[in-house]
Length: 207
Image (tube, rainbow, N blue to C red; front, side, top):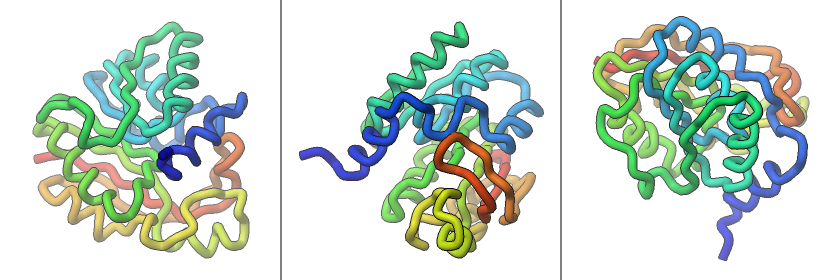
């Protein structure tokens, strides 16, 4: 039986257009450009716009998602950019990453189901070396009002799948926080992130 969560994303990513466009997320781009290239892991990477951007900067890129359709488009985008990314399909606990493997972890609209999101954050944290950086942008708890007003801005429709600064500080407890805020931004990302939304931006360094 096909998992409905997986089917939802396979259906979205099987369309010819790139759901969230070809350009990297603005905040992620700004933060990544401050770092020296190394090894980076992208969680819930979808069609690869951020991973390919990182590869173009010289990062050694790994990525995962539950959608095989997302992976197909990410690899196509990588080929068109003449870069290589390593991309696995599956649930994080079944993927073969190692402790202290990465210099950076990217969580860009990685809205995992509410019952596993903290577990996934802590697992991802174990794959990050001491001194490594987490770059995070996703919709915050205040976002529901914006989505109700303008469904085109996208994002989960249930409060439990949205994020709070408190839970991020808990999930990434042994970190020096560089930046942490929830703010209203104007999104223009492909077909599904358009308009004002309330997002959490969080950058932290593992101690």
